[in-house]
Each structure stands twice: as structure tokens, then as C-alpha cells.
Amino acid sequence: MNEFVIGFVIGIPIGTSLGIAIEIAIGIQQKPWSELSYKEKKMRKNAIILGMITLLLGIIVFMWLVLT
Image 1: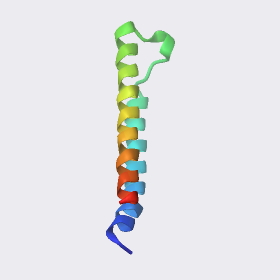
Image 2: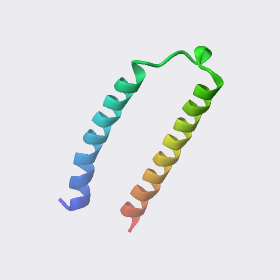
Image 3: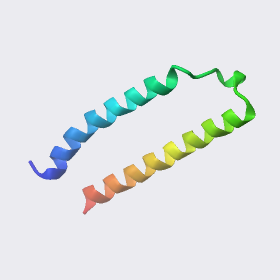
């Protein structure tokens, strides 16, 4: 197996477990959307947008590595 496959096989479980750990840590103190202030809603929307941009960049880099 080449390094890419090994990195992919190791990276998927690490990324998944890290994501679950972060969600548990953040999710404990979350309030329902209706109880958030304007500033908190804005911060949460920005965090979601940043996460989506990071995901898209990750997909682009992955595809670039696969196709080259």
C-alpha cells in the first residue's frame, strides 16, 4: 500500500473521533435556537459557514491528490 492509502485509513478514524469529541464538548452547553441572542445566532451561523468552507477545501484538496 502506498502512503496515501495508509494516511487515508488512519485519517478517517482520527477525524471522526475528533469530530465526535468536539461535538460532545460543545453540545453540552448549547441552548435552543429560540433562546439565543442576536449575537449568539450570528456567531453560530459564522461557525457553520466556516465549517462548510473548511469541508469544501478539504474535498478539493482530496480530489486534487486523488487525480494527480
